[in-house]
Image (tube, rainbow, N blue to C red):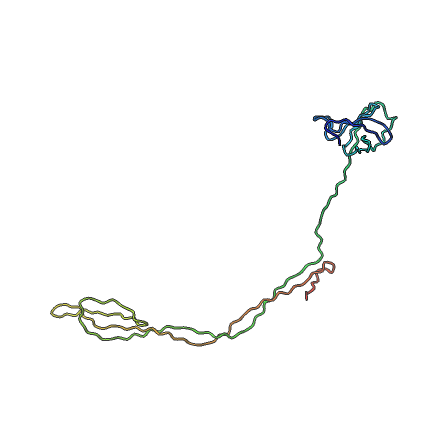
Length: 203
């Protein structure tokens, strides 16, 4: 196109001549269209893409305007049609699969070991007088708990009567048990929509 607000010469397909303003001012009565004013006084409103520039500088309007048209019609609008492609998609079922889970159970012998703790109490006679009680103490696997008693003498004194020695032992008992173990297996069946609901087991 030419510069802003340029008026160019236009020739229709059947040779009628006129002019067109390729850059019309804002606020015109038909926005987006170009007014082509023919020498006969008729106005044509066309889309700017309908004006084809020619090598000699004028523009061709590939539209034949009858010269003997009704004189009362001073202007006409040429609609511009544009085709648009509409792309759509849809879901088509082409098949399917059916997954079945099978649970297999087998018996397996497992060796197990159970642990029990046993307590052995050994009473050790002491029979000594002490000034103050001694606390219980641990010596390895042994726990020593002093036992006191009060006895009547000329004066009351604390006498260590005995000590209890508690020994803890770890006893392991071997054994075996039969435990059920489960294993899962997936079976895939393909569904053919053309053959109804009859499943096809996948290989």
